[in-house]
Image (cartoon, rainbow, N blue to C red; front, side):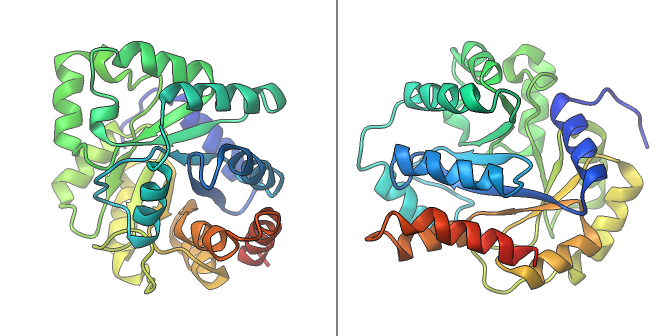
Length: 272
């Protein structure tokens, strides 16, 4: 196992994991169903012990998001969307929670532009501590990093790598060597929101990663209930849950005041 300098996010998650059984990372589509309610939901998630929150930026052609989140993004994009809205939103949260870290999920063309460095620096100053880019393959990330380390600013804000059921052993070794923050372990070959969930087939993958790195292993895709959370606890350091949250939002879209209450109840049921 190679020793490398840990990023802020990695140190934070390792510390949090030492204080509790399992890391809890909710995923929330930014500004859904609107900015005010999105803020209220985040407050609930922080109060209920979310270790960090992954904010998803809307995109017209998502490749990793299942039907629930595709529908959400379509609704969000019916309104004008500007990065400045996110900056102001983060500033509002930072005022109340100045040390609370966030993750940002988006697609490559949002980040790989000439203004990239200034944008990422702006995010970092507003407590974005990790970036998740589903359509940037590991080898392409490493090519860009080798070309110019400043392009990604990976040492400041880690770009999270994915390990999947089809990742080869050689690639897992590379991912483990360069990972920062955490490794996102995809539970299935499909997209988010899967109804069938089992980590037993991935036992060899977890065993290999644990031999290669002490970076936290976080499971995503398909976590929906307490039984799933219990299974995650046998293999990994934490989990991401997103589609279930957005299903609750949509189920109560005509009764907006109920949404934070229902989400709080869902979180408590995950850990009961």
